[in-house]
Image 1 (cartoon, rainbow, N blue to C red):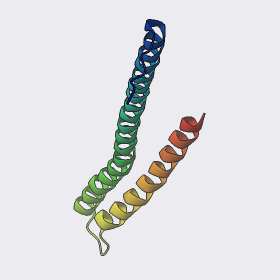
Image 2: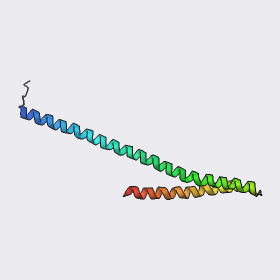
Image 3: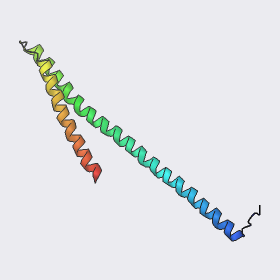
Image 4: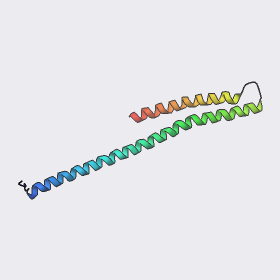
Length: 107
């Protein structure tokens, strides 16, 4: 088998093309990695906003219900009713935040 010898100019072009391809691939990987990290932190932040949007009204409802039950005892449990009301209000609040974040994220 005869081996084909290339001139130094051809070898430089091949090496240069190969080098540019490797650099381009690494750059693409870095860009994708940065975008994935941003998506991770964005998702984690959204998760936190949604969680606290539900937890705060629920805890306020429970605290208010416990206070009402201790102050004015009655047939019905205000703690349970305000717990359910707080969860419902929190879910509406979380829906609002998810919708708002989703609209801003699309721009």
